[in-house]
Length: 304
Length: 304
Image 1 (cartoon, rainbow over the protein chains, first blue to last red):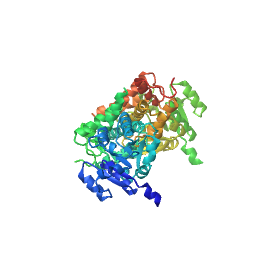
Image 2: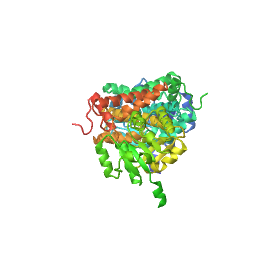
Image 3: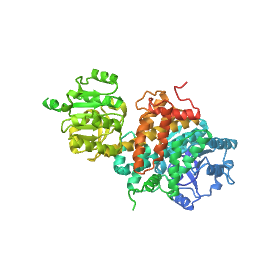
Image 4: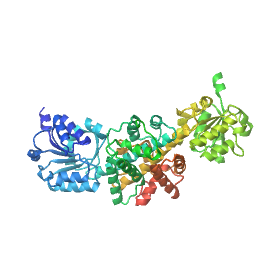
């Protein structure tokens, strides 16, 4: 019993979007005290109703054990830590940051160095798995950082992650692996959409496509996960189209800095950009199929 | 016993390359009489040593039950059936053709109609699985054709295939599904190579790449199958680079006829074309990674 009490962490979670909300509620279920911060007041209210702490975060900043940053990108991550109201300098020595956004590895290194300068531990910890797994506390985390940062974060990782890939002590390794994963994940979603709609032009129904290809060499995790959304005509966002111009943009930014040419990722990015331009940014990323369907004049399942 | 004897088929197999050889020897092991035909005399000699029939094929043409065509493409398929020495008109009524090459669906329809005109059954039956599965009699076959064609082919399918996808009575449906599968398979191989080498520029080793990504949303059947070849530095062709300019070429030819734009398949094709231009056409298709490595100045495992 004492151990459980001693392990209770004071946690601030920045970003209560679909991923951050699942992380924060998983931490609540783990018995921790969690303060949520989000620009959307509805998210804040909902989180309070699910066990979030209601006292002002400012009153407990110097008693926080962990800061989870589950925001959109590098700029927001930097703002949370070092912006005008940045939290890093207000944290107690030895507090630890879990940085979950997909960011360039060099940015992660920079954040870690600036945190270290104020006595704060930093775990480079991009997440994978989508909102459903986030809600269940079953995320995959690609983590890199010092042994001290891993140790400080363990009680939180135990609540929010099913799998933690320990990618070494060098901050940036987690973000590098995440970029590699996002390159493939984005390409595979768009390729699934390309192949499914191509098949429709040849008389292959979406149902038959999934039935056969999921058992053949052409399958992918994303195909099996996302193609059913197209068959159901259900584009409720589990992961939205808007993720991909952002994440593939980060991939290609990192690639350009390394003078690495990534023509397939580039082609996939164009399709997600076109989907966003069609006003589909907030839909499930399987909606990239609508770009192909529009271009060739196909009607997808569930469409008028 | 009588049943086994009655089920013995007289089979001609055209094409004793890596796929055709596995098919032909699987049929031999199934107890059938199999005549092999290949432009390479070494393949013919080797097949005789593994139970192929040595009598001249011309002497038994009018007693064949099945003709398996495991050649490179549509042109070779047409030559086997209807070329100057084409076999179709010499076959007995009710003989059945198993057409295994990746071809446009419209070509398959045309071949089936011409076969029907001379009383020959035609199964549109592209194969998937690679040379290892072919040798084991464990291919996947995407088949379409009349119930009579399926019935006539059953004793052969039993020997050579683990999975037969029955895609309906309309010839062309098998070839359409194969084209869809090849689009994805080709894209996934090239995307794997792109992501693996991109990762190397970020300090992600190929070993760590496979270890982590194979458990994440970025994985694909091809990634798990082909990336180990790169780690081993072993480009012994299980499926060669040269397959992909051909098969993705067919995909894009069909796509163009349907006015379907396939930018991701197009990008992947460029990478295989570049690999062929580097003289890698005969290597395992995982060698497409060498295009990326050369472009950015990386050294892959096993390279000097």
